[in-house]
Length: 168
Image (cartoon, rainbow, N blue to C red; front, top):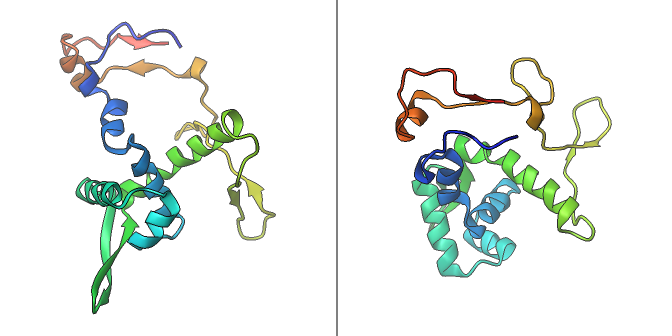
């Protein structure tokens, strides 16, 4: 892909905005632990290795942002566990992509593999991949275009009525 001829301000980029919330190391590790069934603070702390104060701050931020929700599991003493919301579940492909990239470029040997076991079919590995929602084809960088939305045009200081600024 070539450079976008219409730069977005950093605070208007969806990637930059997402990284503000989940770009800190402990955030994605918390999401990983909750996705793997660790809902209690102590289990999340053990799985991430995060300092307790940092973990508390991350959990509170993720709950406030609607990525996690607290659900009570004990009345005496009062205790709540953390669970993924729809927004949290939508981050699972991000974790899969990071796992796959890390297996290829970081780990000497992958420490685990994620498998898919549909009913009536043998278990097999899964991959993070861009797939077109309309036609089901894999989408590669050379076949993906970028188009500024009206909001993106406004944030970039461009006239809102132009619709021909595509990046091929």
